[in-house]
Image 1 (cartoon, rainbow, N blue to C red):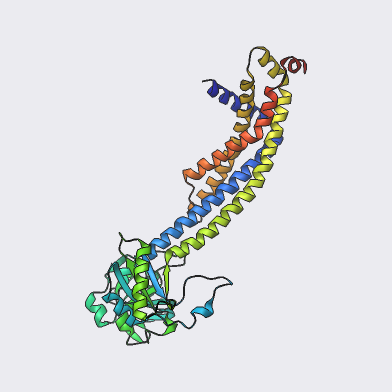
Image 2: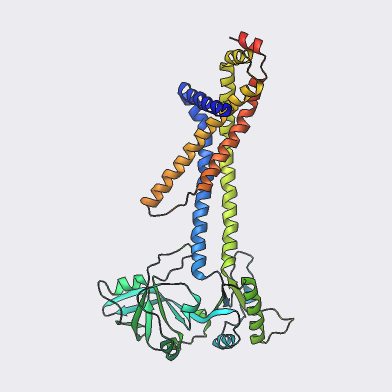
Length: 414
């Protein structure tokens, strides 16, 4: 009860300091407010992008491995010359891999044709991404809003059928049911049998909204599916109960056997995982977090000195009252806690103002600009905790000096 009473009185004194010295106190609290706003807004932004990244990774598949010519990476030190002479994954590799499948739930051979034009009657759309696959449904996560997926007979026979993205359906078939309609792709007519559900573009730029999917066996009749220009790749999805490292290890062994590589020869293929993307972006997010701490830390440091200055002034103004309290039996810890709680109360006010600004901006971004930013309770708790810690640090010495005052000298100070 004593601590609750002290805390209540400390808030009253803090608000009195705000009321009596508005400009001085506001400028002191501004540092805390800006610091908390900077740190929490950075954390909220990082959490938001990390959540969007996880959604993108889940779409690609957390247990999915991409067998490709080029390993995922980049930067100025990327040894591209090392991988330039590698062969692309072949359809033969895919067929042999399906025969040796043990811990995989799905395998597909995919190629990509970018910036193509498709037509329906007088309507046409440019910049379409075309995917030809042997088993897209076995390795990718997606939903179909209209129609259906290919049957095994349609896929094996290479029928002239396709599934289109939501944007393509809206652009070619405004107010018309696209199912069963013929569209012209690469000089051939394809019948639309399905439409992908609307997704929108994620943080990795992945979306099916402007994609057309066709059976690989149909594409064989039109293009050379093993040409390097179409980025052929084999996609493997491991079983849910199998560790990704075990799937990767088994897949590497099978691929080396298929390629007939001796133990001394290094891989001439790349096994790419979504965890590589996550790890690279986590490093970037870590740097952003550090930058947020540094920028916000300087603001909080300035604010902490401001709070300490207010507390020293407060001690000076109430020296006579401190002397009276001590002469009536108040212990040193009572005086110390009184001023310490007041410093914490001031910092909490500044921190809550910073959190309020973050909340307002997240609401504006969500409801006006349609960009959802996550402000979870962990960040709110973090902001409050930082404010309390700064209050303790900046208020301890003024509170300690107040608790050590001689009661006689304090009473006579006025």
